[in-house]
Image (cartoon, rainbow, N blue to C red; front, side, top):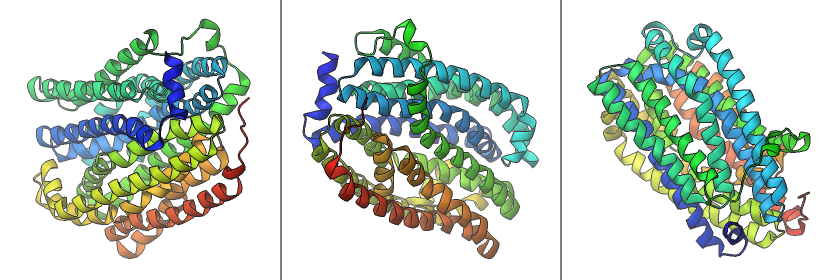
Amino acid sequence: MARVNAEKLGTEPISQLLIKQSVPASIGILVMSINILVDTIFVGNWIGPIAIAAINVVLPVSFFIAALGMAIGIGGASVISRALGADLKEKALKTFGNQISITLLITLSTMALGLIFMNTLIPAFGGKGDIFEPAKIYYRIVVIGVPILALTMMGNSVIRAEGKPKFAMIAMIIPSIGNLIMDYFFINVFDWGMMGAAWATTGSYILCLLYIIYFFMSSKSELKLRYQDLGFDANILKEIASLGFVTMARQAVVSLIYLILNNILFKLGGENSVTVYAIISRMLMFALFPVLGVTQGFLPIAGFNYGANKSERVRESINKAILYAAGLGLLVFGLIMFFAPEIASVFTQDADILEKTPSAMRWVFAAIPIIALQLIGSAYFQAIGKAKPAFFLTLSRQGFCFIPLILILPKFYGEFGVWISFPLADILSTIITAFFLNREIKKNLLNKKSTIS
């Protein structure tokens, strides 16, 4: 029964599959993004705008550790999708077991280092002045729970690789709802302040992990883990690492960007400018949910059909995923352009922040309609197991294009230089991705031979 579900990735119409895979992924991302937004609104209104900046300082550190689980999950999911497509069940099981073992080993070690160097990391990421103390309270509790988050991110990717998007969606919805409920009680009712916000976040991770454990122990999953699957396999670990490194590098760059931007903005405009960026970054997570949902839905479809040597279906999935994601990106663009002031006012009533945020937000979202090609293009190479181009294209937007721009432009244009860097990086990286994706389709995809072993 489970095998039949996986095989649908190679037989059902691509449009139908994209909707089935993308809608649950989009809903999951939406709920998670709403959770982040509401969490920020609660913190801003019940604790204060400095608390928003404090959480934004902690995010890159917790994101980096959690990204280890995400990287292992997505890297292994690519292997699992292609293995299921080629009917290599043993390889899929061994991959899943190795994912669990390496996630625990790496994230627990990294968590320990994060706690040891806490007082150094927080100021380095912009936690200075009045931001430091609330950031420290939030950091300590959240980092303790990050290994649990890493396991949930890993497990969620594997659920999606099995072709079970609805269960992956539920796994994202449960912690989001749980976090909001705990936010209300811990912050508003119990008056725990930053400690309450942190425990609500960590508690939500635990709820998510419990659900994922239930999924894999039930009849709903075809990956019935055996004890021997937990033992390390060098070849599988190498394949997971080569593909997962793409995601890890992307998340590491995100953390680096937070570090650079928080420090640049603190110098240019103090705590308020850091808060403006915190609000915009939350909106980026929220507003892009449909585009990211299509990208997530596209991954198992491309991976399975590539493993099954169905290159025509792979090409069709690329074209339709770009078309759907671009249309949704255009809709997001229009909403942000028209409602930026109203969006900013939801987070805070601080006059200075409300004055700065709408204009900055519009510039940050200015090139959103075209990034669909960049996201789908880089995701394609990761889905089919081509780590080098996936790595390059994934980093092209935020690393190779964006970081140099934010280091140079603010020296000439101040805060405006920061905000204009976002659309410029989007445009440049999309041009680069279009070139590589077009070359791949013409030279390799038309005559693809399976590399599954």
